[in-house]
Length: 124
DNA sequence: CTTCTGACGAAAT
DNA sequence: CATTTCGCCAGAA
Image (cartoon, rainbow, N blue to C red; front, side, top):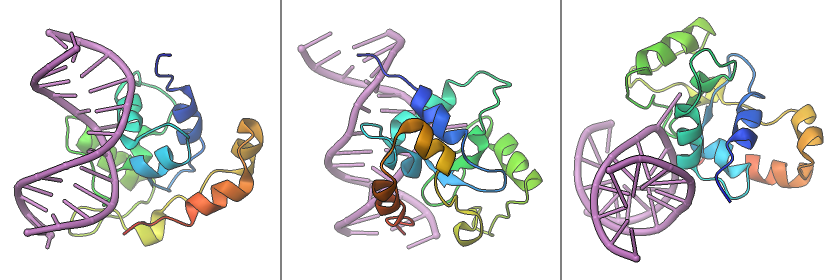
């Protein structure tokens, strides 16, 4: 069965402006999905997509270096996300609080399980 | 089938 | 902190 990125986009679409999540955090909420798959899904997005791909960064809070890295930093700054001298976002100030009630209802996820997973972040 | 390459990550050094 | 190492897994070659 081929890899279906839709569930990943559906969850990333749920992240509010000004908040940031890591590839691993998104993956942990989707059974069978790994951080690499999330990164791959983001890279496959078409330019102009409404999905907030810029709100996904590495677990250390740093931006994955590539051609569009500066665009991502710019977009985040526009939303009020601040960066430390190290170049990493300040997790304590902008970490995504978790999926909305709407997402949980729409996907049928177990609310209790979601809380358990959220409790494991941050992992640093 | 094997190898290599990623928008990754955690642990070890 | 910075680097390395190993595990991860879908695709491409």
